Length: 297
Image 1: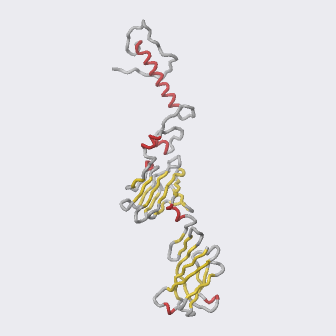
Image 2 (image 1 turned 90 degrees about the horizontal axis):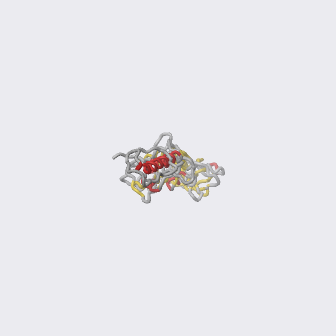
Image 3 (image 1 turned 45 degrees about the vertical axis):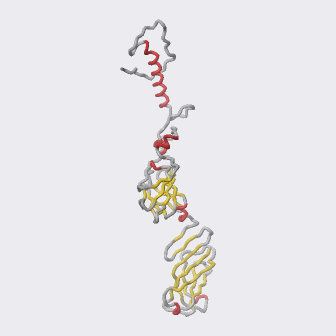
């Protein structure tokens, strides 16, 4: 059984079969004339709609694929919620991430990683993406840190106060990665607090850290010697100056013979970047060693 051969043509009217018409089939048969006209009209409308789908014509919508929409390949066409959900761009649950490579199909996902998951994860390559707003949210419930890196060497991650290629997500922390534009991620969430101005720090042997309250804490090792005058104590430098004032400093002896270096005291200088450390034992040579801890703002 053959099919009618369609052609894109618009007929102004549909032929009405008359009582005198003979019964005649085939390509040119009178009994197929109505079906032929309707088929031609259908093909005509289909081709015209597809050709005009990217134009803003009221009442006409072409359904795009989810990939085209979220990759920014086609920003003019519509996509149904069903197609989007089928592609996995919206998730109502949090799923475990078992592989270390994320892809564009993971956009919209919320995942968690535990001790059975990898320790290093690579984000999708977004160097050719022409849209923005896609997200991937990651919770770290491992007992150790995980590393999250870009998927293309030309991509960057914007974190508070810096732009990086990778960062660490500590245990219990979470981060939401947002596509800003091609080659650019924006990282947000509690996993980014440690990079913000409120929590910036230098965690080293001689380090410092900002607290959300505005207080600044510093710690490290210092030398102790001399007494009797302001300039008699050993001059030490803070790791960073206190912008306003140091309000407290404590010294603790380092070693197993505290009696040899006496009792300690300290005086912060007016520049708030240095302090002198004194010993009741006077000028000790070599100078005694102490640990200090200072708080200011």
